[in-house]
Image 1 (spheres, rainbow, N blue to C red):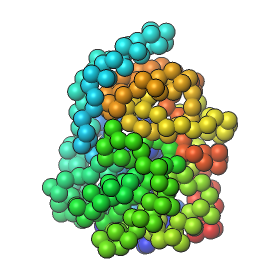
Image 2 (cartoon, helix red, strand yellow):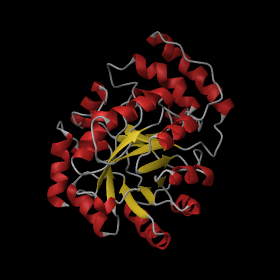
Image 3 (cartoon, rainbow, N blue to C red):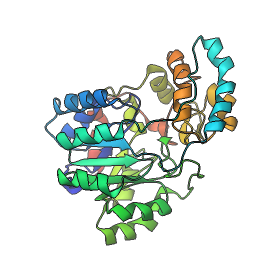
Length: 340
């Protein structure tokens, strides 16, 4: 189990699946007295086990693991078929193939769960939904606390049904994917402060700790949220440009340049996510369906083929990304330690 108040620094490194979250980053954050989080999403069962082992080899401190919960809402398969047709001309220009639409799997969810039973961590958090009671029971049986990410009051109420020890409350300024349980739903536009004010009383009754996240760019902003009742804050975008991250160079450069606006789009994955506006978003945002994770796999070859430039990459970024710096995790957390 995890006690957020036992950490020297009430800061959590948010999970950033797809490459940015390396074992080196997770270990560095935990070694500095905060809480690192290993992102399990998109990894094969074998790769997940390797990264878990690598992280353990770099730190003796507690760290968390994040998994994608199985989708509660089925993706729109016919719409994904139509979207695939629209991608073909771009793929041809880039010299890559767009895979056929296939029914998505479960992101090797149960294989990863079995690994975490055999090699427990203090906290496992879930994004895109909530685990069922059986999954929660399995984790608690090996001493693991459960955290659920929510982006609306309605989802928070649902999450309390499994009595999580931790609730991660995500505001609309967050970079990357919104954590809505229903992928087809319009994102809640309540600010992080408004969400926190509404959810905090429920969490206190349920005896759940609160991690506030989304657009936290300065130590002063973090202090405000802690004073409002959060037990810890999670930083995501700020870690994308630290030296220990695995962020692709064009993504890193675009963040540090600070010249692009952020927008929320389904274009890259089929789920709403905030990133830096680029050509791909301009061309495909209006026609992208709520078909996660099908769209994620349809666009993967295009993203991989354009990895040396920013125009067709998913440049995830929070609204306040211009605070990103070219620095180490120690330098980033050092600024927050001074204020917290």
